[in-house]
Image (cartoon, rainbow, N blue to C red):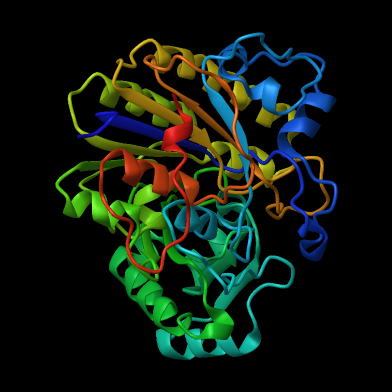
Length: 396
């Protein structure tokens, strides 16, 4: 019998909490996403995270530890090689990744890859750099419309993205080109986590708008995860945000796309009003996409404050047999150099209205403690060849 009927796992995308011991190997020595945000801000209001023990775990300039936190807290350290979204989430659900997904942030994609993509699609490629999707469309959209060339770009994530104007490039042609790109980037030296079709409309600068016809061509997880065993055992596995894309739909029974992190929390709040048995797995991407990569400390801090406000609403809806887990998938220190993710440990907060205890638990766990704990709660065995130890017995 399940100890908790519903588990809500919220991933605050990129909320790192201090450099891992091997961070220097990634160029990330001294990073601390949450700590450095606090240090740079004059004011920083996160009362609900404070009540859950965030400042007890990680010292913050403006936020005092509380005498009696509502739940338990610890740091989790990534065991896998890498610091990207897919590696973090896949490890969270039990997979140990030994080969990092390829990123092409610094110099764009290699000539050999682009030559093959150009030859097979029949399009001249323009762009080939790390960029914001909206900015690169403004820069190159008119050229693409006029010439039929194809905009290819990347970001700090392991992605290859292709833009296409729905009226002139054609949506089906965009999808065809992305399918070819996915096939090409299955090679080890070019293996990206996702190929993304980024359609847009408009005829000139200032009028371009991306549409909802985005399509992700993701890699499937290398093995079965906690999500698969939960689904196979008949439990609900509900995703919010980009979880569907990260796992290519594997192990999910329901998926909800989010327009923003605030919208993702609003969706989670609505799901909390429903009756279900199983997992609600949430990724809130704006912290990473809008603020971390753009090195915007103030924007990141305000996003955390907006999250905290919605978290208060969710806390008010939790039942005695609910468990809330809050964590992150990597860091993205907005005070650091460059625009890449940062190799950091992450916070782990656990709360249920039925808990009688509180305080610090062992920091020795890897990200996979999350999936192992969820599986343990529902009495299902983690798949073979997975990692992670449950901390369910620590949450009393």
